Each structure stands twice: as C-alpha cells, then as structure tokens.
Amino acid sequence: MTGDLTRRNVLRSVGTAAVGIPMAAMLASCSKVEPGGGAAPDTLAKAKEQGYLRVAIANEPPYTKVEADGTVTGVEPDILAAVAKKLGIKEIQGTTVTYDSMIPGLNANRWDVIAAGLFMKQSRCEAVAYAEPVIVSTESFGVPKGNPKKITTVADVLANKDLKIAVLTGGFEEGILKTAKVPTDQQVVVKDARSGIEAVKAKRADAFLLPTLSLEDLLKDDKDMEITEPVEDAPKTGSSAAFRKDDTKLQEAYNAELKKFKETGEFDEILKKWGFDPTVVKGVTAEELCKNPG
Image (cartoon, rainbow, N blue to C red):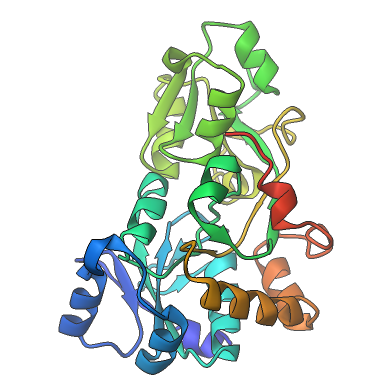
C-alpha cells in the first residue's frame, strides 16, 4: 500500500495532493460545484471512472501528515487509500483545509470525502454521514514544563477564570470547551497545531488542548513543554471518513469494504504505525460516537 502513498504529493501552490492528475484537470475538479451545491449523482461511479477521490485533509499528525516532499499520509489517508483501492478507486487527491471549512466544502462538492481526524459529535453527524470508526482517541493538554498552572481537566479551566486555553478553530476541542460552557474569553483560537504551541510559549495561552497523540508528535523533541495525562472529563472520541448525506452508495460501499479491512493485519499495521491501538476501536460504533455533545 505504501507504494501508491509515496506518489501522492501535495502541490503546495494550491494546497492539494494528487497522483497522476494533470494540473488543469485537478484545479477544475477542486473548484467544480454541482448545480445547487449538491452531490454528484453517483460519486462512487464517478470516482471509479476518473480513478481518484477528492479528499479534505489537515496537516495534524498522526491523523494526517504532509511530508517534506509533499507526500500525503497519516492514519486516516492511509486507511482511506487502502479501502478505496478495494472499491476500484486507484488514488486519492487531497486538499489541505482548516477543520471549520471541511464540512461546508464537502457539502459544496469541493471534495468527495473528509479523512482528517474530524471527530464525531452531534452537530457534525447531522451534517455528514460518517463511516464506522477507524480510530478512538484521547485528549490532553500541552503545557509548559512542570505544568505550573496545574491544568489537568476541563473542570480546572472552569474553576480558574484567569486560565486561557488554546484550541484549533473549528476543532473538536473547541466544541469540548463550548459544551462545558468555558467562556470565550478563556479560549485562544488558533489556525493550526504549531500556532497552538507558539501561543503557549508566548504566554498568550496557559495550555493547548489537542488529541494526546497529536501533542506527542508536536512535542517529541521539545524540552520546554510537556503533555498531561488524558483529560478525564473530556468525552471519548473517534473518527473515520465522512461523506455527504446523500452519497449513500459511496458510504455503504465504503463501510462494507472497511468492515472486512478492519479484520486484516494491514489495518492493524496502519494504526500501530501511527501510534494507535487497533483493539481500542473494536466494538465502537459511529452511532455511539455521534452522541457526543457539541
């Protein structure tokens, strides 16, 4: 599987990853919106015919990652690419966007699927149709060495009105704080993960709330910060590919192949490669995770 992944490169000038697709055709595809903003009549058939799926990604390892040479990888793109091949779709074409732009862009037909660690919660599940979960994740705080403000839970933030917490714009963590009724003046909204770390180091924020594994990747060589234990009062969360609500053929076909793929060693290998425990997701359903408030 990795052979094809190494050929999916991001074209940095447009923030897009593609394989074997002429520039003009790719740009036209990215900008095309069906009349009325709806889905194509049969996205599955179209993807098989054209040989690729358009996918919204982020650049937040281990969920998604853009390598120095432009290669798109990460746990969700790797799984999407593997399952797509089983559906007869040779490649995936990625566009790097912010989390708050992913669902509007999907429903405007700018891409066919989201595979970016877009965690399931009620509002998102009302707007898109998720495949069954492929990962389950925990949340932690990235804090200065020694955790001087002793921040370990969302309750700690609520108890101290002077604390400021950095969160990604449109991210699941922003929803956690909103659901917990953390005042907006205690939230420092940042555009990407690196900006969250910089906000803490510049003392504009006291902590950065992000998935534990994302923080581990960001701070693996950072001697000035540390990561808290998983946040006890943050909801269990997980994600998978997300499709337009009316793309039932694609979602159902994807789920059928995904179910078989999750029983293979290749699925386990992908999760382990990116630091996830494949046993944790077993038995967890999209219906369950879609009950997350927010």
